Image (cartoon, rainbow, N blue to C red; front, top):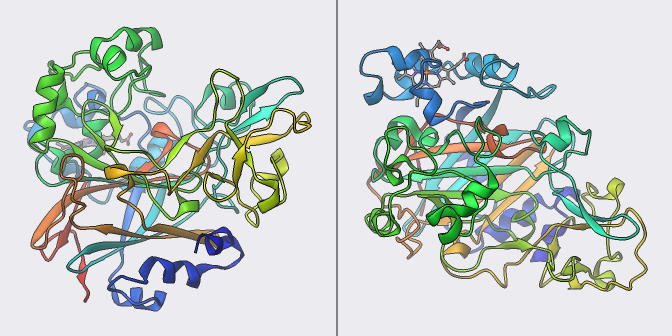
Length: 442
Ligand code: HEC
């Protein structure tokens, strides 16, 4: 089955869909999706519009009476295009405008469900004439292996002219009503100053010294978190509640589910990752589907490509986007232990991460059926997710008769952090009234 995945760019669409739906309610043919209504969701470029910015004088909405209790769409319905345009071109919310960046991305969303699964089909147009399947690599400089490739908002790219290399992504952030205000403010609850590429980025040494985030979670930067895990009104990154208080919030379901399909780090094994946001953006319990391909002690990659299987040990810069060949290292499929004496030449490149369906375990491995095809400039991602994953401690369990709040995001054209396009929160109903109502299939 994985063999067919490899050749997707060469036209494996039908095969891939069959793999995804062999045991599922919908039949194998993509034409069945034509019976499922399509909603076009306008994703817009949010720049640095953080949770803190929203309540600051910089956001005119904050001065309007009753702002705290209103949904973004009360004031901004249908304004995504205008907002995206205003932000993407630069100004207060975008200190590093990216040439040619789209103001909005139209995300086509279709959803269906049966007694066991939720089915999602997403389509969007990429800015580039190639799919973003490449990700940062280790590059041999004649002596040492050093990182090459960064997301566009990284200073190495806009300030030092280094290459922009980063995977495309499609993300869903989901709540079931347990997180205060998520239905109104969606992803903005999780986006804060102090995070990477945001104003007042927290210093690495301060995060490392922080009792909960540094000493407890072993982090050195700030990533998404929910205001409910902080003690002050402004939800400052360092004013965390205690580990016990946060565990209580988690046990009562006060986290959001965050799942990401990734063109380099999940797509080649037909999966999506599975995480959640609470005091930080964390991976679900178990073993994640991707890991760093780096041996810290030896300062070299752990794996290289298996030449016997794929015909090469490494890639070069002009080969990393060759979609007729694997671009990811799959531990159980095309990898062997790195050999430091394999005659490396300057410019040889090996992916910075490896992926593994075989090693993934537990709740972190729940999204075992998410598959994309890229054709004529358009990604089509079909994603099957169990309604009840059996892991309510870090997943949102979906039930018939209920609606949930979803936030959608696309990372396009070698970008991470805030360089994505996002939706206002919207409801998705499984046999319930909602902005998007999933079609019941048998
Ligand atoms: C009470 C009304 C109101 C609410 C609720 C509201 N806003 Fe606003 N917002 C405004 C007004 C008014 C402006 C300035 C005019 C404009 O851009 O539409 C603005 C501007 C913005 C801008 C800047 C757009 C630009 O053109 O530069 C962003 C981004 C924004 N709001 C995001 C949000 C988000 C996200 C939410 C929900 C968490 C939200 N707003 C909730 C009224 C509101």
